[in-house]
Image 1 (cartoon, rainbow, N blue to C red):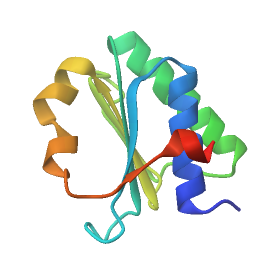
Image 2 (image 1 turned 135 degrees about the vertical axis):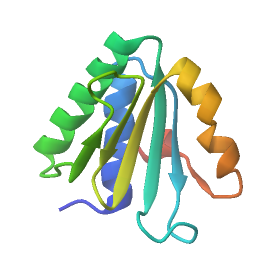
Image 3 (image 1 turned 120 degrees about the horizontal axis):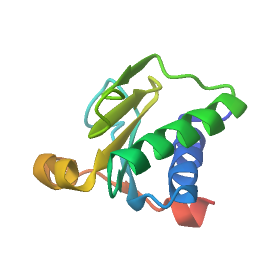
Image 4 (image 1 turned 60 degrees about the vertical axis):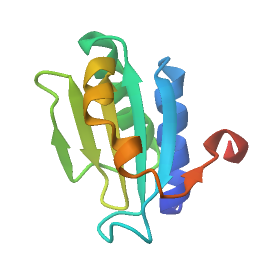
Length: 117
């Protein structure tokens, strides 16, 4: 079984496979206490957001990881996949800009997932 960091990196790579924009991993271990990592990315429209979500879930299933909770799939403006040890946020670009999670959590360490690939 992969570590939570390795799974977060795999989720980031899966999102990138579907042309997700600005894929980031935030290390939440010392900050939030309920999850280890946030994977944040965005798609240009609802259709792409859904495709990213489907691909990330498929890749995670291959690794034996399943979301405990899934939110936002119906409207595909902000889909949240809660894998407990890491959470994947897939935004439509407008919602990502509005909620600006990176600014909210600007003091947490960023994981250089492309180096980890």
